Length: 314
Image 1 (cartoon, rainbow, N blue to C red):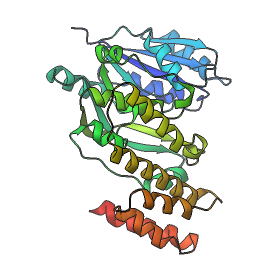
Image 2 (cartoon, rainbow, N blue to C red):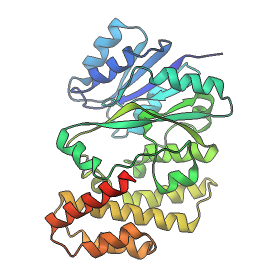
Image 3 (cartoon, rainbow, N blue to C red):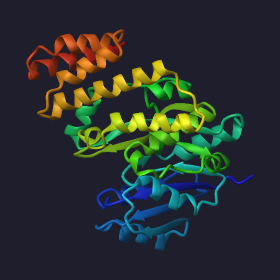
């Protein structure tokens, strides 16, 4: 049995974090791994820092390529170098706790019926940005991430995921379609869950780093349009999605955009709350937010934070 874990790490202009990311791999309690870093044309010291680590530990390999602008392309470049029987993903600014690989590999080796496993994760980054996201954070206690669940909410993060190499090859890696930029990891995880449920280790073994600019990330990538394109593309591949699921998903994306604008933008946000409610008029959260949106912005922010605190408590 090939128990080597190939760690795929795309990296672009993350000189502030790449050393911490690599160090979180070096301290793993499971030692049989290779780390494959793809420097996607960084213009800062990211590539040099990665090369320095590779020179000290032959388990680390670095490939440099011209900037593709796509994490999907960088992941695929690293994936083509993989020789392990298992693939784990770790973005160039995220972190793992020491037992992450050990616990995931132990699960997959003892449960051959599963092709993949993910873990819970915590947020890290600039305090004010993390504080923003924590207002809307949901804790997932599911045993398995199913395709139906993933359609409605992306309950996985790519840096928490480990898959069997045979599964990675069957999915043919990440889709490098430019129109999927910003949702290419979601596309991959949807296709993965469509094959079979992904087991969930309900323990924070990874850290997802949020940096300044992340709050407006959804708006920059026009996620509403991209998700519609993504779902249409999945349909052409024979993956079935119920129309009602698609409608509710689009409503959730529209609602999230309204929340982003409420906290960070100057663009009117009530329009998005109204559109979300029209698409899913049985969603109580959408209804309460829409009615509450008559409040002044500062008061509305405090009111929604209070409601979410109560929701998360129960």
